[in-house]
View 1: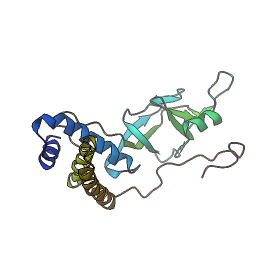
View 2: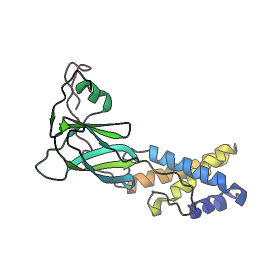
View 3: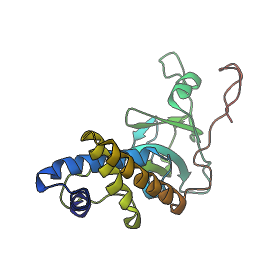
Length: 214
């Protein structure tokens, strides 16, 4: 992070008193870059998930931004379908009046830091969870940006753009914005995206919003 911060200060002609502003601007640029695409390959991660018999939930990794797939560790277990939370609640209501079945999970969702499975697991099942993380803000001297090293200029130019906007300098803001957008295009062109389907979606009954999910 120190290198990025000092480059922003040097290129933009700022002083050491602007170091905090430079870090804030770098974080603004990082958030903006992440928002430009949903599935950046450099934000991919994975973790192991184990169910507990007769328990519907399991802990969700704290840094999940977008879900990918749950891949069974053993070939005998089928891939469970991802269902968004509102649909999961509609299809599989969790009330005392409902006798929720147990078995091998065929559907899963996420809510409030937990996985939810349906039916309730009747044994321990292990999965590898693939997902995209939300990057941590740069703050410490040794912090590193998640962006590939050869593309870190995008953060420098983005930070300079945000600083110029804050300083109400439209000419420099426009200049750095052009540089920034060019780096965004280059990053997208040279960053490989996942080509396979990221999640399997469960079909919706026709009575729910008049159709099936695709």
